[in-house]
Length: 233
Image 1: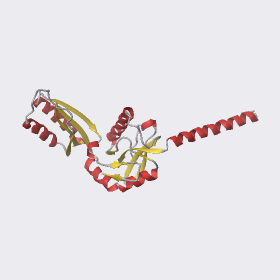
Image 2 (image 1 turned 90 degrees about the horizontal axis):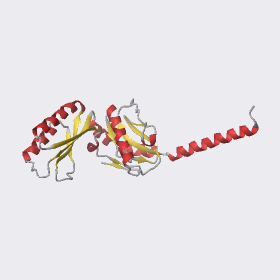
Image 3 (image 1 turned 135 degrees about the horizontal axis):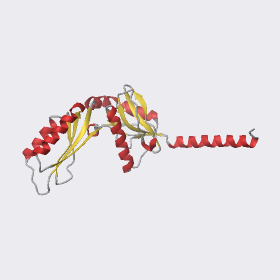
């Protein structure tokens, strides 16, 4: 039979547990957004940052994917940035996603919905561009002393562009870097694009091709949003 002292101790522990749970809930009171999808039935089988479950909030015909987060302005830490990228890559394996940049956090769900609602037309336009497509990165590197003729560069670019919906030129951050391009490619042309890279490698054996992807189409999403009440392109 439980004594009065034991009963009081039990109630005290329950109250302490409830307070601790509330404290933890209050700590994770912000909304970290990963991306926006159109698949209402999507099941996310990976947890978000801080191992928090990823949830969805309806935005007309879109779903905003987010998880609870403890800070409104996250520090740019390599581990979390890589985790953010990995989460988006897993989502992109399931469906087309408009990826958000690392650190897109909202103070409240009300602000989140208000800001995203104001950019709904931009999301629609962006989604129509990237739907069923992936981003593939191609860097071409030369030996230090070599000169690369313009016709060689033209051959490479024409080969990439013929299989791309769109391409974006990246920064040339080294004297050895001949080309640095991100290409938006239809998913069903991924294998063909990869074969074209192999052909280019065989045609231009003095050059090194660094081929990466498939990735969510970061380079083709020019949407800037934040936890404040504004959004722009």
